[in-house]
Amino acid sequence: MRIGMALSYSGGFKETVEELADYEKAGLDVVYVAEAYSYDAVSQMGYIAAKTERLEIASGILNIYSRTPTAIAQTAAGLDYVSDGRFTLGIGASGPQVIEGFHGVPYTAPLGRTREIIEICRKVWRRERVQHDGKHYQLPLPAGQGTGLGKALKLINHPVRADIPVLVAAIGPKNVEQTAEIANGWEPIFYVPEKAEDVWGPSLAAGKAKRDPALGELDVVGQSPLAIGDDVQGFLEFGRPMAALYIGGMGAKGKNFYNDLARRYGFEKEAEEIQDLYLDGKKDEAAAKVPYELLEKMSLIGSQGHVRERLAAMKESGVTTLNVSPIAGDHKGRLALIEKVKEMAAEV
Image 1 (spheres, one colour):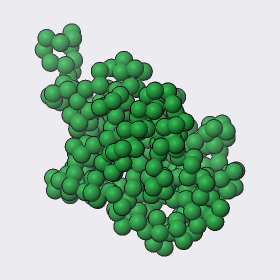
Image 2 (cartoon, helix red, strand yellow):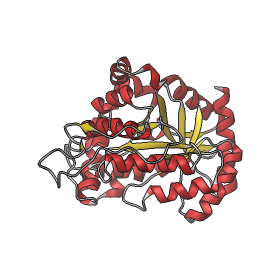
Image 3 (tube, rainbow, N blue to C red):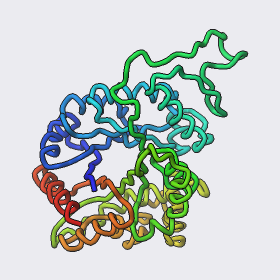
């Protein structure tokens, strides 16, 4: 399993990027840069590319609504260029609150748009003249729209790679099926290896049955907080606020994908309670309702023996890349965790 890490820069972005050189030496394979409704991820990834040499860089994620398909393709090709072929395009649909609230764009047809965007991106990277007549995107604009002067163009530059990897964040059954069919990688959230087959197995199997063999094996990215030791069990509690935010607050009643996932994991009662409390403004009470089992099973927190067991479970369930969040008091401690989990992952 490869080891990745989400970039967290609470102590300062530039300072954190300077530390990435140490993580490279420790064996970190890939760094993921989020965007959400914070600073754009693209400028940060370009900066990281200039400050690192081997480390792979992935967007985690760029949403599919706020940039045109060809702008996404240009961005990916540009980042792959400045990083000498180290970029992975991570994309996802995000959710209605961010897309309609922050970007002012209707949250429509996430599956259809994702498929068309990936098709268009790959055309751009192959330097084909971009012609696309889809349900959601038409390039060039058809007659009767715009000035009528649109022309089918191809990317001026020759990309470093014509097959930049595409990683899709997905948790819904149809979205996961499509991801397994057309993407290079899949990144779920709140990944519990023991429940992955029941929740996602049929969707993954259906998608892989239609998968082009030229895409290779699907890279499965599991996310986990990481702490190793005999006195770290209390760190599991750090996951409660985030879990409550997603399960309870990332969407309205009946339109919260993360709440749906918790229900599919078997926590129907807890998911409903968390959402009711969170939407009522009782965030601490909502966090307290997050099942301890969920926190434990989706984490790499505990003694060396326990973490080794969790790594084995991750691998057995199909995880090929671990996106970890090391929990330690300082850079030296976080670095030691990356070194240790890299060593342990190689042994399972």
